[in-house]
Length: 225
Image 1 (tube, rainbow, N blue to C red):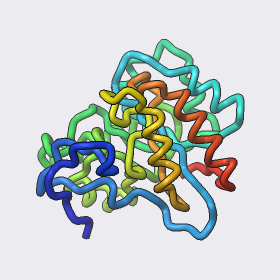
Image 2: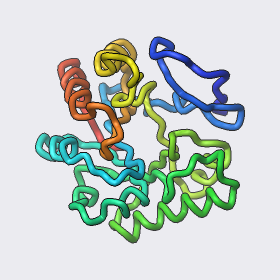
Image 3: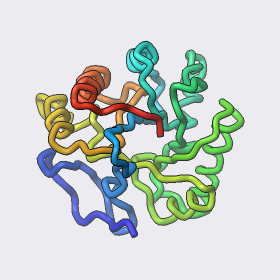
C-alpha cells in the first residue's frame, strides 16, 4: 500500500515540493523509479494542455537519438494539432497516458475518472495508433480510484524521482542549479525523470541538457519506459 503524504513540504531543501496532498491522495514520490541493478534512467515528458509545443526540446531529443517516454494529454494534442506532432508516432518515443482532460483525480468521482482514463487510452490507440503501458495522472496525483482503474486496464502508474526538474522552486533565483544539486545527490538506478514539452517548464532545454550530460558522464544510459 502506498501511504499518503502527511503535511506539505515548504522548501526545495525538503527534497520534494508537493502542494495540496491530503489523506485521499497518494504520494507520487513513493513510486519514483523502476527497480534495476543497471545504471538506467528514464526521461519522461508531460504534455499539460497549453497551446504550445517545445520544439527546441523535441528537436534536441530527435537529433541526439535520445529515447524518452511522452505522457500524452489529449486536450494538449487537440490544442496543437495544427503543428507537426508526427514525432509522437516515432519508435524513438514510447507513449503514456496523461488524461483526456487535465483534471485532478480527487475532483472526479469514480465514473468520471473511469471515463476520462478510458477516453485517453482509446484516443491514443485510435488517434496515433499507439498502445500504452503507463499512465500518469494530471498533476501527478493519483487516488485509490486511479490505481484500481489502471489495474483493471492492465496499466501501470508512473510517477517521478523527487522533483519536476524544469519547475523546481521557480521562485528561487537559480532553479537549474538547485535541480542539478538534487540530481547529483539523489539519483539512483531506475529513476524516472520528469520534464515538459509544452513550454510549461522553466528553461527546460537548458536543465535537460545539463542533467543528461551529468548522467552520461556518470555511466548512466537512458531507455524508454
